[in-house]
Image (cartoon, rainbow, N blue to C red; front, side, top):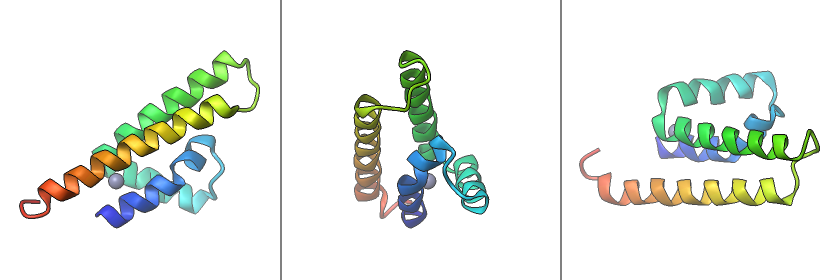
Length: 91
Ligand SMILES: [Zn+2]
């Protein structure tokens, strides 16, 4: 479970940017449909990236977008790690 999520983390920002090959894109999309934590991260990331793009009027995402993205990914990793620590015996 966590191995797949970890793979999805690494693909997430490219997925949001639409830079993945079609088959990889489909795999990420399928995982997002079945994994709520990843789905939540994706929604946050997409909203953030879209907001940054609108704010910058169509310019390529700058350092600000990249920084917010890293923050979200770091927060999500922390959440999943905490879940792993507490839930390993029950889930
Ligand atoms: Zn996941």
